[in-house]
Amino acid sequence: MNFDNDLMLFFRTIYEDSENMDECSAKVKSAVAAVADKLDIVRAELAVKMPATKLCEDGADMLMVLYDREKDMENEPFEASFPLFEGGFITVTFYSGNSNGFDNEQRNIVEIIANTVFIQFNRVIMQELVTHVIKTDIETGAATLDALINHAGMLIAQNRIEDFSIIFFNIHNF
Image (cartoon, rainbow, N blue to C red; front, side, top):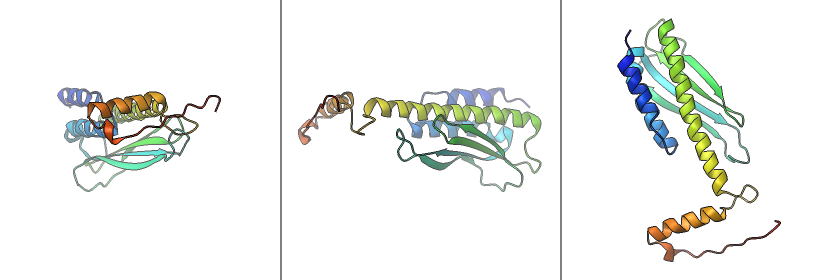
């Protein structure tokens, strides 16, 4: 099997920078679609399970379909689970259209693809977490002064600052 062009397209697509989870999802879906036919993938899923924590109050429990050819799946899927830093995990699952499942070569490539998908989603999760930490006071949950100034700057740029009033308290030794 020659996967050179398809794998190059997969890696070029998946490694394009993503600002948020929606962009990451769209790029991963396109990347998986680029190799799905050659690997006989009929469905690919991503499950994210994160417990609620102080940094991520709601946690996460979602299932996302990355690719679906809407074909019957008659065999055991390839599944890879990866731990997240605060507990929880991301699971990437691929279903083969072949009644015997993935052969060894396909399985090795699917394993690499699953790893790469995890890395991209984990990177965006960490990026969003860091942004949240930078913009939020951990003790109170309120916006930090920097976040407030950035938001005010955005409102000024959009010529909407007149719609708002701001009260700021800076309590030392809170």
